Amino acid sequence: MITLQEVTKTYSLGKGSSVTAVREVSLEIQPCEFVIVVGRSGSGKTTLLNLVGALTRPTSGSVMLDGVNLWELTDPQQSLLRSQKMGFAFQFPSLLPTLTALENVRLPSIFGKKQDSSAIEDRAVQLMQKVGLEDKLSSYPRQLSAGQQQRVVIARALMNQPEVLLADEPTSNLDEKTELEIMELFRDLHRNMGITMVMVTHTRQLISYGTRAIEMANGQIIKNGS
Image (tube, rainbow, N blue to C red; front, top):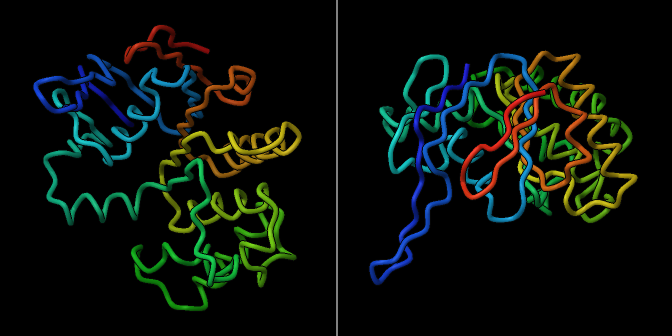
């Protein structure tokens, strides 16, 4: 379970000024939920996601995963936890252009639990099949459409069998048809793999794909429900 207790994140702007991106947020996310966080630009939703993923240190409050305070861990312990328990799918694919799609998917295995090379290869191929790209294993990012690149990103995020998948605006650069295809993929993966998912988006129409919707404004949760 993911638990945030009275979490605030304030950024210093220099010369004595600051901005509070997340303000006194308390939140529980149960295992196997698919939570979609919606809000306008500047609402604090991406900062919230970064706090959940231990990518941003809270100014105050605590962030817990399965009872462990993420910011009481050392940097190496945090890195190990992220690599073994979390998967990340960001707004921009950030695929390595010199690697094939399959090689990009395999990348997280370098930092995950030790496995033999054949098991790593098999899992990467299976994930490419799950996201509908079994015919693109040897393709390079430049040879893939935007939607296909995002599918590779999702497969890569699942490579180390994470407990939690965090997605930051994963459909914002896609056309409407491709956006819906990617959301259907997320929903199918959630149902079939039993993974906890937290996604942020500014598109309210996507809320129906999750099991719970959270709305943010001015750094606070203003709606928390189905």
